[in-house]
Length: 405
Image 1 (spheres, rainbow, N blue to C red):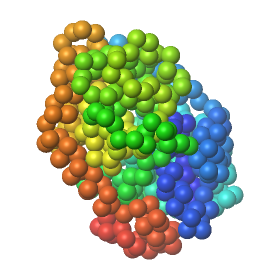
Image 2 (tube, one colour):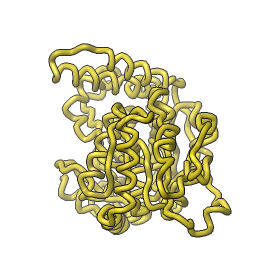
Image 3 (cartoon, one colour):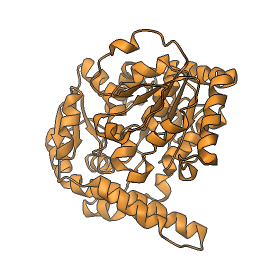
């Protein structure tokens, strides 16, 4: 097969696609990963061939502008306000699709892929799949925040699809590859194929200090990459979180990239490490993790069986946080209420961390969720399902696809 992957230029959206792309190449299939030109370094760093398409779009600036505009709206009608907020949130993704669509479609017509696999906000991908008459495979990361796209896709994507003579949009694709354990996922009628989450954190090296068992309970604090790449600057609350955990009887490890290090100045004595460290190697050694509920960190913690204390700021991360908490595998403190100073919310966060560490029920729920996640088929085991779709026979291992037909 030839399989075209499509992602917009945010690493947290691309990295969940990487293990499947590796599995396809290992099975002898051709893979190309299309995105904005400036993102090609991230693609090739993963050992995958990249396809630069269209022009670069400053997604970070657009998202921050729209979030700020949305927060200043004074709407009395709650439903209208929600629609406007959703429109603002989707606008940068639509701009990304508009920038890539023409070039991507031209190349796809020449290369003739058998399938298109895409992260759920890469809207140029279903456009290409519909134009070429091939299956569109949506690969999500965690709790399915975009499952409701069919109800609003015409409003947001209709003009773009009409421009290329494509009348049926289908933003959720023909099949959803779902790494989220069923007990953690929403319930809907979409055809879903389970696929095990294999954490990819980029090129990694196991540090020497991580080879030994920690002498005390270890708590990881991380703010991920996507929240920093696309979120407003004032939502980077990791330094305040670390300060709030200063009195905790635990070893605190801060997983932070090089660009974030300068924001940590006066750190408590219980902080053992601040700097780059791959979560897939760190979290199995931890008793808890504190983070803003991004999909990549949520799923890495799920597969490691680690209780989660989340501080969500955005609608999709809030959904992740609620679902993890509802299963008893974690707790959450709403990001917009967290001040990080000596106020009540900082004390609440520290108290929540103590609860996660001291109450064995959280660890038991997290272990149960981990076991459920590890029973899901690997990317290599999902490859035959995609081969079946490419050849027009939805059989393979995909009971979800068969039911969806």
